[in-house]
Image 1 (cartoon, rainbow, N blue to C red):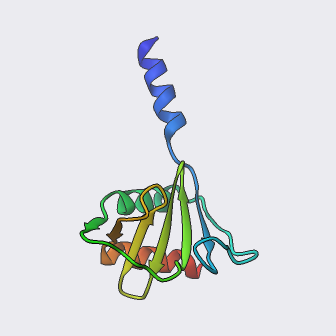
Image 2 (image 1 turned 180 degrees about the vertical axis):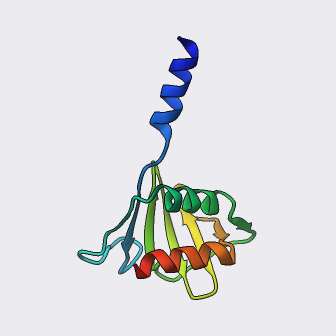
Length: 113
């Protein structure tokens, strides 16, 4: 019974979608810009890449974000170019994280789909 309960709880916590919104500014999304990612492998890869992003030291002063990314209960701002990506957790807007080149490639690929 306990094993079933643990498996059930962990299954409920699994993330099934990632929502991305193109942003006009830190506080305003572009109309009709929602991108919903439901492919299990893509969702898992995004979560892994965001979880392993490299924390950057120092105080940040960022331009308006390109995207807002929602992964489960977490939300991030995303700045993306062809070669690199930067994220900021909305719960800690004083810290940025650098995405790997693979993560930047993945995000660009998903945005272009």
